Length: 244
Ligand SMILES: C[S@@+](CC[C@H](N)C(=O)[O-])C[C@H]1O[C@@H](n2cnc3c(N)ncnc32)[C@H](O)[C@@H]1O
Image (tube, rainbow, N blue to C red; front, top):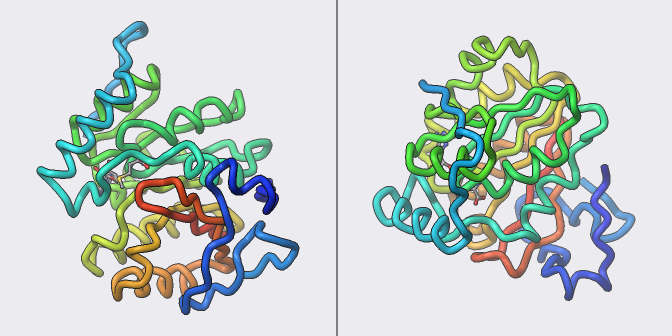
């Protein structure tokens, strides 16, 4: 589904066209017509769902303990969640995977859009955050593992190829070797034409690691577009929308 945030709605949603930076991706997708470029746990039904504040506190605590792994001080905001999920072809996607669900903000949106015959699982490395996601989205399979293990987990799930991956990993904080490892595992399992959505904070994009990651995306995928910016996110962010 194409992004459809009109310019005059932006001020209300907190989503606007991204400023131009020299990452080679050109204008922003949807800003106008110029679209350029292991363990499995299930939360028991009725388990307590953490409220926003409690979830955010757990998230912040995780960040203070593991700043590189978590890579953000707060969960993604509703405008950024929309930019992630609205682009996915929910009518045709039957196998969907999420990387780094954190407190489960994307997971909830994915579950509410997933086709009745769709298969879905999430991969979260931090046990406390995996627990939060399970509590927020009962019945979701959340593996406590690295996204680099996606191939092995797909084998366990009986999924040959993935239609769509929604990714919340803090790429700009990762060493190059981990970026490469996860990206290679991703491309191996994503079907040709499959969708890969991942967000980036503007502050990270101007840093060398962020620029390196942007180049990696362009070399890896046949198309890469940027969504409008979610300005009210903390910090402001946009989504890279990539097709294999
Ligand atoms: C920036 S937070 C995003 C959380 C959530 N998706 C959101 O947008 O609010 C990054 C998440 O990725 C998880 N993570 C970091 N490295 C990971 C890895 N190699 N595999 C799976 N999850 C990882 C962190 O524990 C954290 O939950």
